[in-house]
Image (cartoon, rainbow, N blue to C red; front, side):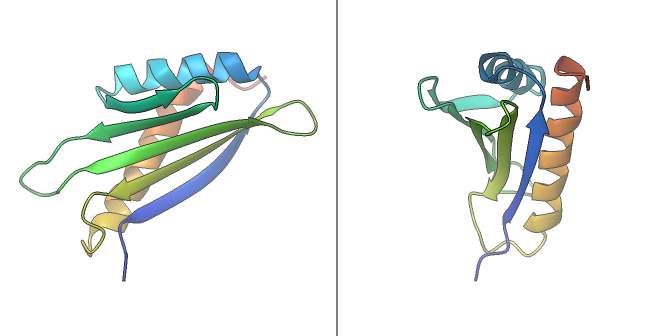
Length: 109
């Protein structure tokens, strides 16, 4: 059984490349490590490290162009050890903190 995952989808009225740049700036501002980045596939994986209370998480970001021309962003926070019972709330906080910071780079328009 895996508890350590939280995932949300968001839509932005910006070009996909502007959104990808904002995602990278968000990761840098939150001091996340880039584990993998594929600019051609519009996918990024960030990680934060192990601490006294967690085995760490990976934050998977996938971007895509929606039929109406807006950019869809899927953000999933996944614990390195998926059996941590308290991980889901921590993963949820990671996603919300990422989105809150991303929204400063991509204000609603």
